[in-house]
Image: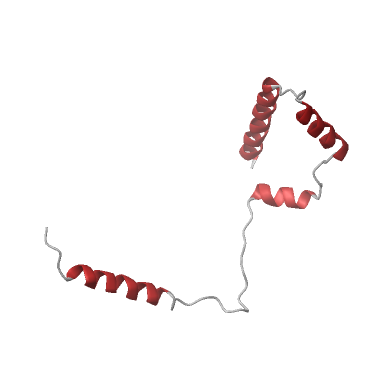
Length: 95
């Protein structure tokens, strides 16, 4: 296999292409940014409900984990996950 001067020409081309990419027009500072939210995101944002957070319960669970007495009920987690997925699918079919 012969290595010739074409490899240096190719690298010069790549570097010049990289330099020209910087010249692509960018939005001006007064241009408006446009964001589109999914229907679910819009619903969650407009519900106004703050997520339930019980600091006392979190502290209890943290203590139980530290002491090694916290048990995980995999069956309950699986059941709730399936229920949540079913609700999500059901709500998507209605729209």
